[in-house]
Image 1 (cartoon, helix red, strand yellow):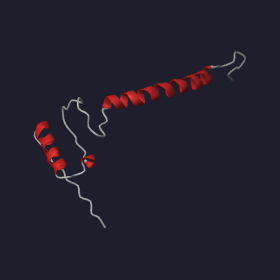
Image 2 (image 1 turned 45 degrees about the vertical axis):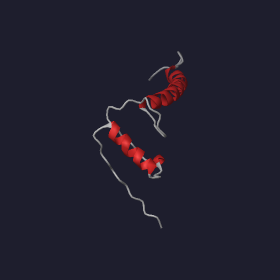
Image 3 (image 1 turned 180 degrees about the vertical axis):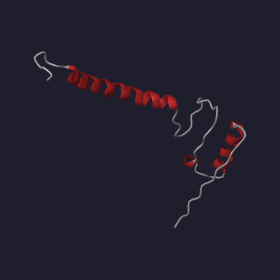
Length: 89
């Protein structure tokens, strides 16, 4: 049975964290199992599994606009059409 362990490390800057990742890679650690969170970090670099908020907005924005438009057409037309001959009692 294998035991999994979680480790959290806090570094004062991007360069120091990058150096730590390089040392782990050199020690044959599987860096694809790392999760890195940063503050005020620019998304100019290519990292395995990096998913930015801009990419989420592009992906879900297109789909949300499509399905929102379709629902608006279907439900909007269905709920706003009232025949003139209908009287309310």
